[in-house]
Image (cartoon, rainbow, N blue to C red; front, side, top):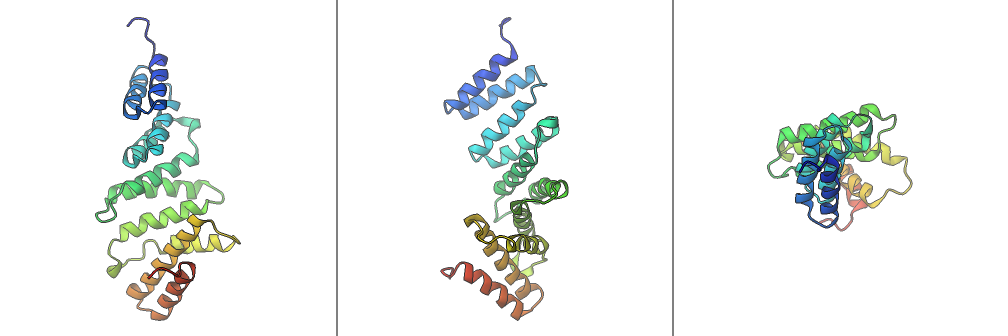
Length: 204
């Protein structure tokens, strides 16, 4: 035991993760951090492992810790993964507002820091706020400005990707519901539903 150093746990943890023992490997990496808290990049390794295994709730928490402790190693992409992780960890049938606020905060940070925020950031802010809205029949319109921003961002692209196309369908569908149930404007509702239908003609 006297010859064991923190780096031994670091390499052991990495090897365990590489061999498919994710939970054991993460526990070993955390052991390394208890012995040497200055190895802040390890917090990012833990977060990335949880993200790759789609353990989104744990990943969101891990990215939050990495962002707090990682200093200059932290990038806007870490904030993006934190926000998306928290979003995917929420049960859409019973959304947790506290978790959604964490997701929105991470994504909001990117929008304020990036000179031109990537459309995916705007899209996920819309989706987060859509879940906050809850009842489509009593819609508040929390996601409306973000879906409109996303549509504007996509108008500059000649050929959206499949993910961006799905985002546009979500945006027009949401705006259709907003105008139908909130504004009681059937013409605008129909206009947005029609745009969604044009992008997804098989959607009954």
